[in-house]
Image 1 (spheres, rainbow, N blue to C red):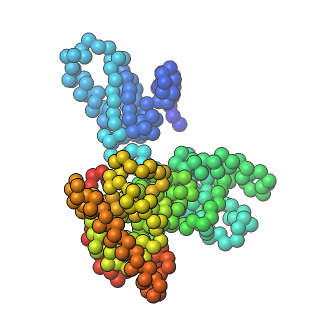
Image 2 (image 1 turned 45 degrees about the vertical axis):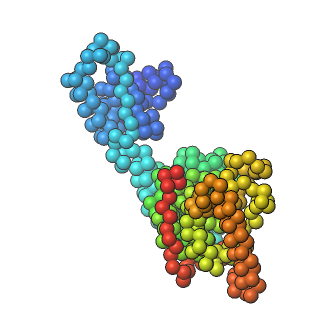
Length: 403
């Protein structure tokens, strides 16, 4: 039990913070916001709180700072009262495992380990009720879970504060979680509420909550990426797309032209700008290599035509000319601009280069139409598996603006 001295310190901190704009003790604010700001007069009290709470890393840093201040008085601040001095500490000063993402990752791993112990559920709510003991609050107190999410045949033990803070979808679902107990008199009162999600694999959900808890992804199976993009859109977790793209980019450096066409279509469909830009840059820098690919020519037939007559389009997007609808993106228009940036001649020769690209594109589409009529191409390039006999395309190293 917490002793009365610690309780008095804690209450003192809470009351002093309540008089300011910050209503939480500074150590709590630090672990949530990764930033500590405290009066120098309060540092010794905070050391005692850290000792009781076993915040050893934070305790060591503050103790070192106290020693430094004691034996290295600054002349400029010698006449300033300690109550007016502030000590500021950034979260990067602590080891990764002692910061919030590291702590949440530890909780996530414990929750996932407990989730693997759940029995396999086969037949809906009737069998779920019979296995309700697995969702009992007291069964796995070490993971602090307060909600369960059922995906297919597995029950994941999760935390409402994490799900609701990262996803507006889960925030709305959990706001109605009280309805779980209504009309279910046969369930124990301390049973965890359970949400059931459909059209999502267990592996994809595990990766999704890994991002929600740790704000990052260690690695990802390329075959899982499309489902992750779809989950990010469905669960209103849009930053997840960027995390998946970051994990996927090293894989794209070694793919064939056929695979890169697949990723370009996929990234354009789900609005994953980093992968879309990477694919367009790679195609523009290796245009003739892709022009010789039947998959690339087949992809051209699936894309919307370039916007307007080429004779009316300007070669520079910001130049005066016809009105441009910035709300709609066109892959062929963007590919044209990327190619002009990489390969076009300078200044007055740029228009000639643009005409050459347009004529080359028209020729490729005519060839693709002929190949399609001869039955040599598939009607839907997106159904092609992510394997190919074509050699890898030359890779493109993204510039700093793409990172």
